[in-house]
Image (cartoon, rainbow, N blue to C red):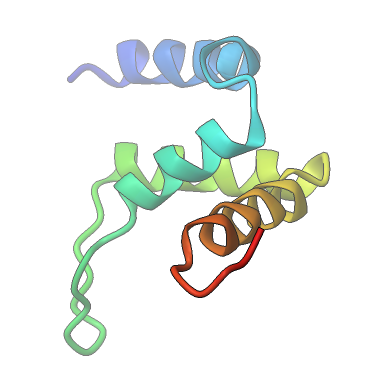
Length: 87
């Protein structure tokens, strides 16, 4: 990919990520999908584009309290599906 095209795409994503992934939960799911599944030693090969998206999502989650919100929602969802939970 041409560096100018990649730079333009990254600029657009930096400006428009909140439209594409408006909630913290959506951003957390996207981040989870981008993270490498298996890490063997320090041999993690992450493409520059993938690294950009990971950094963008982490930054957005940290900036507006979204990480706390996403974790709270995930914990609440887990509690609701536990078989021993009495309602």
